[in-house]
Length: 344
Ligand code: SF4
Image 1 (tube, helix red, strand yellow):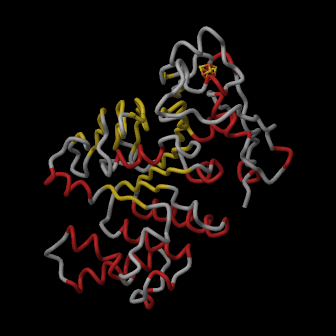
Image 2 (spheres, rainbow, N blue to C red):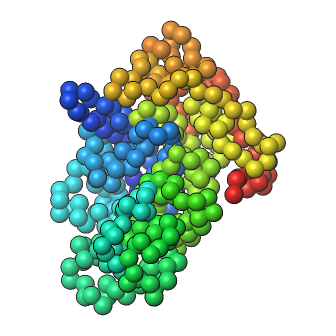
Image 3 (cartoon, protein in one colour):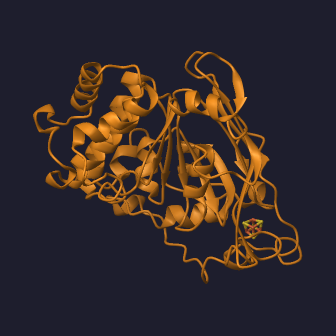
């Protein structure tokens, strides 16, 4: 497989949770594709289904419907959601996850070396202990950990260092795809920047593909090639990062962008307040899920008919009846202005 080839094809994935007779639609009909070497940002408010989607993709949750077609390192295309246990074990090595909370995602009773080594023990039972230790030290050094401290316990490390341990644990199996679930959200802003730069460096060095799940658009902008915006379990827009930030197509994307703080007030969009609360996913509104909060809602259309995620003439995906007529504007980019707009 070459860089740029299709590696993941997510097709109409649904995830429903049922409890006490209530069915919650956490993810509804989500489709998108990922090419090898890309970073795809998945954004949305808390509870929009982005983490559930990530977990369905790595099969930590069983999707209720849909397919995740994955092209393996050998070029074989498999439905990741349907493969049997034996094949799953093989593929699992190729798709790893980094979790949100570097404090609770590491076992406090294990040394850092044992934490990083654990996936090797589970997946390579024939590998000698010395080989495993060598591999762990090598990866620990690559993520910026001091190898002299690997016999210490997680509590002896700062939040940023703990997230580096989580990254090392994901990398030690030499994966092709890493799902980063709010991987920097629990960190201070300056540490966030260090971890994002590290993820970018590792991507180049190991040819990784990332699915980067975050509620923070400014972080997603910095790391992603394409961005998918989720609202109430549905993907409402999927575009290249620069296109999405300059010219959002969905009113929800426009509102999210208006809330992103930028360093230079000349580049700040006027804040677009969203009316009301995010609806209950167990009882979503009829028609467009966003219509009760949308300032462009067309009565008789948007509150009746649910818009499908459709390809636009310029190859973007958007689920809005009025996407082509609204001509929304996002950040004002000038040549080289992208970095200027970012908050540190
Ligand atoms: Fe707004 Fe209508 Fe588009 Fe929904 S379909 S986002 S309500 S304009």
